[in-house]
Length: 324
Ligand code: PBG
Image (tube, rainbow, N blue to C red):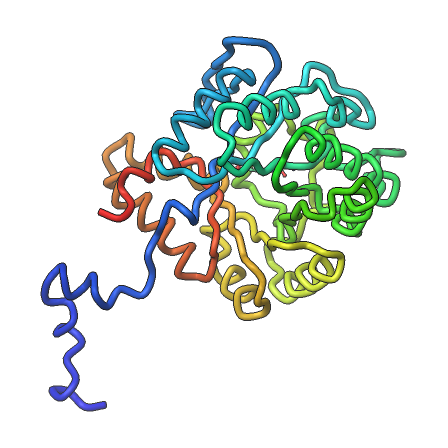
């Protein structure tokens, strides 16, 4: 197509014309806001590694949920930091643990807000691994019942969606079976299907107190070098009954988001993880980039790559900027 017949700049000439032909738009409906909950009352403990985020008791989580909903927010994702930890992560299935109590409080204060819960053992186990440990190895099959029990506890407390993030094989099917048997066949599963063993989770592990006490997560999370393997993970989770597929992290893995987008017709989520947000904040703090512009561009990139939903700590900050 020869120049000067085609001049792409014609459609960039004014803001209005750029608005008219824009291919990708961010909306409040796209965002899910991750929050951290603890037990007790009146707790709002700042998390040093995650600027702007805090560990919240259920009453404070409910206040935040109302504020978030009033900004136009639609969904939150809950992470629990329990009072006690043991070898099998039993506090994760405690109906009086921080997550079930926070679900109750949030649902009472903001019933129309969707509450997603992260289902994993790492915050609840004494060794910090996402499954049960025997002889210093993370065992797959014995972990499944514990994960399913935790998911059931969340759903019983009123969670709208459960999101398993442990990367054990077969956990989506195990959770689906247990939920169905208990009469919760209507509750969707958002599977962290393609979750890489990433260094970008650093700030989160500090926040959730979930760093493994020995070894690392490379025996169950995916090798950052692999793309084709992502297709297998997605196919397995869909076959086991996942309703929403997630890729995590998002920014450094946009090729994977696109790969999965092209593979599936189901809703796709991508998680802009703690390290991605920490980099943006740190760069903005030294004046290296404009925070608002860079934050919006990072999210737009994730959506353009093919994500329908974005999990991001930036959600409450960017909501007021959307649609302007
Ligand atoms: C739990 C879990 C992690 C994250 C979400 N769920 C940590 C991990 O796998 O070590 C990371 C979230 C983030 O970095 O923002 N398994």
